Amino acid sequence: MNFIKVKDSDKVPRQFKTARQINKLKVIEAAKKLGVSQPTLSAWEGERKSPGLDNLENMADLYGVTADFLLGRTESRIPDSRQPISLQSLPAFHGRPVWSATYGWLLVNAADRLLTFPDGHTLPFVDIASELFISAPPFSEAEPPNGQPLSRSEVNRQKEIWLEPISPDSDLRKELQGWYRVKNRFVENEYGNRFYLDTYGSKWLAFTPETEA
Image (cartoon, rainbow, N blue to C red):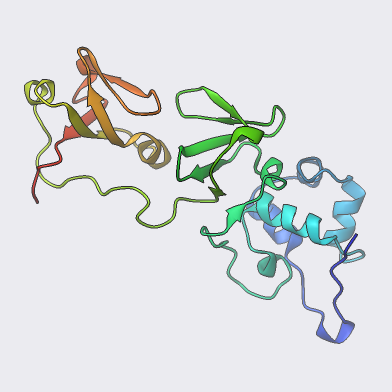
């Protein structure tokens, strides 16, 4: 196993404990998620021992920070969202959302080794065909059209609309916004998410591709 070694003369304060506290995790909780013992994690945080490279990467993934932040090399703790998540590191994201250019947002279930879609259906880790990222890359989703939303009767005359959920939850809005095909009683996107027409104006609004600013 490779270990991270730092010369005493070059030693800087590590941020292992800080990163854990930012995520409001207790030592025993973080150790369990990392797959190590509580004394081992405490030794890393107390700088009595150094983690292996794999463990350092797992900590960075679990806490959502960069390895450089953990090692005290930078004050920036935000990882580069463009860096893909390896299949081996995916269990460290248990309970957290990850982005796929093919599927959109997915929730990681490390216990069952499944990725869960917003509509509830799942995909095994081994079946994921596209790279996964910490967040959606810039401009990965189309911008919603500008202008006035459609009326209920106008929605019925469209084949496809851009849907904006009405919700204070920004993550939910990002997950569910997008292009939907208009059916008889509902609109549905490619992932099977549905919004019923009788909730129009209370749960969602629609725009057309032709709407101008």
